[in-house]
Length: 338
Image 1 (cartoon, rainbow, N blue to C red):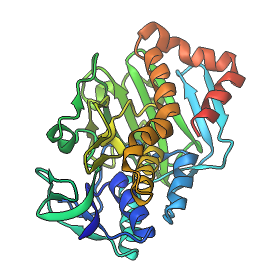
Image 2 (tube, rainbow, N blue to C red):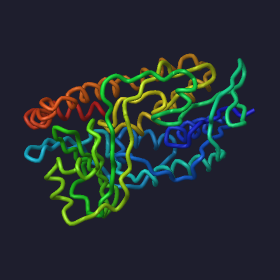
Image 3 (cartoon, one colour):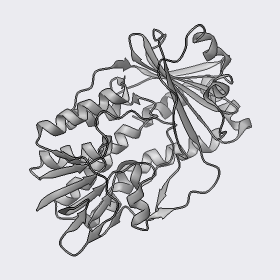
Image 4 (cartoon, rainbow, N blue to C red):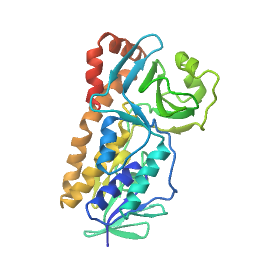
């Protein structure tokens, strides 16, 4: 019997499969799409995410990121990462690296989709495969989370993300966050002549209209056209009633998500996948919901606090001003996200 069946072959699912295979377990990933898969991702991996990938034996090539810079077009504040650089990496390159590492460890990928789950006291069956445990890593709008009755409505208006790349040389080695009353634009260097620009907002408008709210950024990109299509995702806020249902454990975005505002998606995917597999190898699956809460707590609190401020136009205008006037406080906040 398969030890661990993983539903979803994105970063969280592949991280879980890599961790399981490294622990001597047979891991099989069920994923209908061929790698690599591109998605609406900011593509900035924080230092904690780089370290987590390294711990899984995954090395990614990309642009070194030295810190975070906030700007509203007039004032700015920046803070260097304290624990080593982050990395600006195309989502497709990251997916390839994870896929290659999983394959090297003997992880099998089955081209199929999980539509339902049957389980008893000793096994779980999905996509025609039977395993001792199933890890649900099927993304932000996880069908398995809904199937298992774990979906929990998220209050308030949703936030949405749009991303496009531009063929220009990066002008900074920081993730540059542009703020306006309508949302934020995240500029991430991902190549020698390629930057990604992701916009997060509660307003559902075309990408170019969102970009127009950031005139300083528009000036930087003047004379260029998008190098890739616009990709979107949302609503970003997702909640789950629990992170375990019998022999099924939810990891990554499927286990719940606050917002992409702090750029910790890869770090959280690796951390929750590692926690789930470690609980299984220890014979303590019942510990996973508490482990999940512990490894995600700091991110959830900090992101919720910043999101609360960003959600009000009057407060959003003050964020850059406060960071500019109190650089030590801003540095402390950035260091807390590493």
